[in-house]
Amino acid sequence: MQTAPGIGVISSAVLMSDDLDEIDWEFSGNDFGQSTPTLQTNWFGKGITGIWDRGTQPRE
Image 1: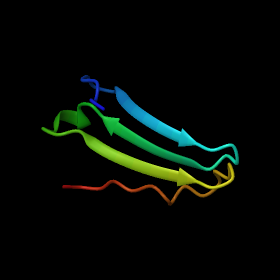
Image 2: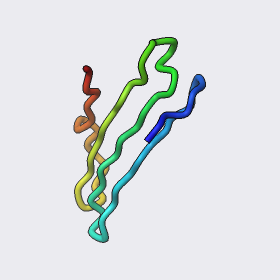
Image 3: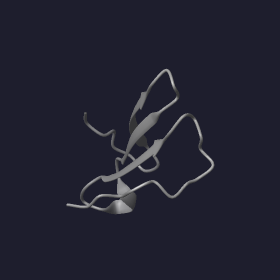
Image 4: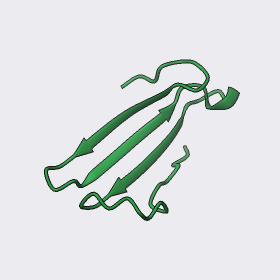
């Protein structure tokens, strides 16, 4: 996957099961002027999105 360039552009890949389990990868193409894109991940189980503390921003 290649990120799209540009400020405010988010490239993403989402996997979702029939049970509404979900895994997200979101890439910022510009990261507010940084030299490399930022990756953010998140996951949800059984479609429950009420808890927003499961995301990570892995770094090199």
